[in-house]
View 1 (cartoon, rainbow, N blue to C red):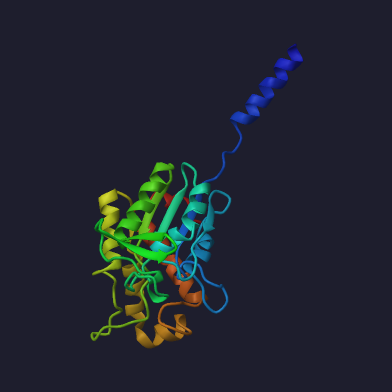
View 2: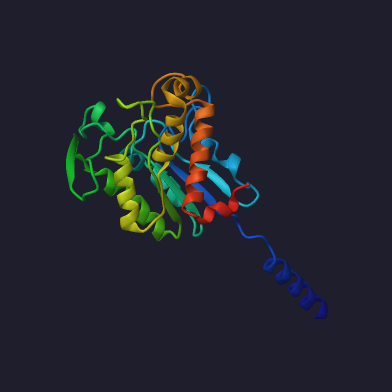
Length: 252
């Protein structure tokens, strides 16, 4: 009996001092968050370079070509929710694939309604299949609410800037549309917001159009190379520090 009690005490002691499962940062978004990692890279693939992997994990579920609408429609959000546990984090960055008018054409497959309202349209795909298409803001709102319900901690980020410039030689911002709407939903839902668009745009402004193109954009105006993705990952870290987010304790 004494030996049995001693064994039980040992087991309980080991259990009490065992290391709990480390939290995970889940990322959802488009190709600017996760890409082929060949010529083009997404910042989510490099975020872990800035973090202590012995204390926190990164799970990048972003997928090229997806919008807030298609990420859910294709069941990708359901897969993330299956894994989200209390204490995990969710970083949400969309905006590059939302702009087309939502309809049943190939071009309109990804499109959403603009703004943050709760209005919607119903699309008829035939064979009895109908789809409710909502606003960009409402899609973000639903991601945030569902993550909260699972005990996770969502963070909204504005989209990374494209290699586009205004007449004053400044990087074009997303402050009047998708970046603004992400910020508004973050305020409404009382979750942290990282203005990734502005942080990286300021860096681009500092080196100018020619250098930005040469250093970061080997092809089109949206997708960065490794160096550009690393710069955007650094901007995410900078943004988290700016708002004193709890994730900063995991930065190396």
